Length: 141
Image (tube, one colour):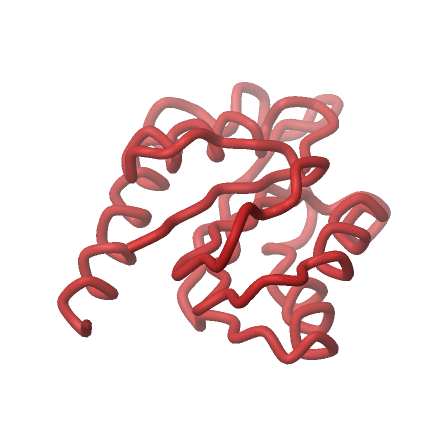
């Protein structure tokens, strides 16, 4: 099973989750600047909310996907809204790329809000979430 982790992070919040997820599933976390290398069964895609939307870099990455992706699993950090699920699902729908219903979202620190988040517990939960997603996919094969 081929798994990839891509993320965009301005302040490092989403990068923390990406690294925890990648370590849990045995791959390297890469920024969205690095294209996917070949068909991928599971793509963990991380983003944050900036002015109520995902960054242009995430939009560009999704638009540039030119390989087969079995499914994309969203993970995100946000200070004010719940997650980037809705925004990312629209981008993927436009490309006809399957999007998992499961997602991992947690608070991210911004200015004086949610200081220290994501914390170690958030990262541990993200890692466990990723392991479960991969195990469930392997069992289904």
